[in-house]
Image (tube, rainbow, N blue to C red; front, side, top):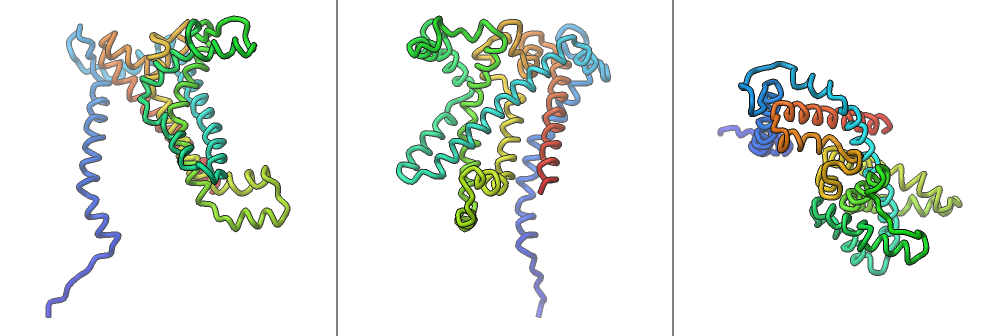
Length: 293
């Protein structure tokens, strides 16, 4: 009788995933490899296309405004991610405690997620408009301001405006992730804390937040990486970077070199630097998260 060999479920699953894995790697690695190749050549539509080594990278790092652009990018990313995280935790706590109408309010929270980022920028640009925007009108009617609010007059207020617009679009995703993490915590732990006399604040900081920390941190990392490379909201609200280029970030810097300056070699170098910076920040974030577990 011929002996048959069997494989484990995990090995069988790994074999079935090979075609998809190969396709995914080809989809990612081939364009990424081409971008790396472009970053080492001179390709500006004016001079002959030749290999120049690290010349494009030297141009980027020697750019007087590069460090300022990186600083603005970090300010925007940290501000957007921080505002998204804080708002998402508050909304998730409210939805988690809600009994009546929870399905309706969950659907309401998710709705901004369906709006493209570029449209979110146009929407908030209209809302912040000093002449006919509802935010300025509401602040004056409530007596909070005596004159119309114009966020585009100040570099700080312009940055705050694009941060709010970007965070508004990202809050639904992180809220759902946070809510799922909160609902995965056993009710017995809350019952035990109530018996021990713990109040709501202590319960949140010593039970809810520690047990839900990992999913929240993963969602926060995803939001930070997306906001770090974004351009949609910024470009639609403050074309060209706004007053004094106060919102001119790495995404805008890259966009200008591709579509305005037409220096594809330097643009590729900017792309590689942006990818490496995102990877380093993400790796440090993940290491710090795993180290505490």
